[in-house]
Length: 135
Image 1 (cartoon, rainbow, N blue to C red):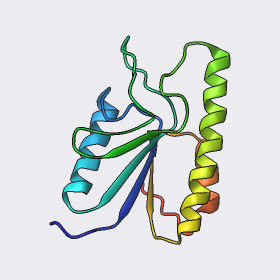
Image 2: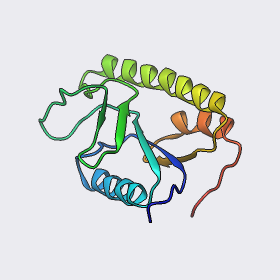
Image 3: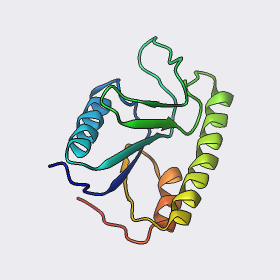
């Protein structure tokens, strides 16, 4: 424990770090990686949506256990169809910027995808050097 075990980037469309069961699973997973010395960053493809609570925090913040997370789209999911579509486009554009910046760093990062669709997964698979499929 304590040694650096790598750099992990989590890309997800679930609520993080709080929310339903999926968000709790991811938060515990990231806490475990961080406890073992890994650097973990989470990028959220969709805004916060859980019950009637509104997220009023910053676009980039830290979970209570020090895991950095960033909203690629809007911070809050809208109920309006046009705003949902705009959120998807902004998130898709920022995902491309993220992937370009990662490719430019020439650093080995492990990208973990959780609860995302083909629309967002395709550019990640196209830029990744190695793709491992876990069944």
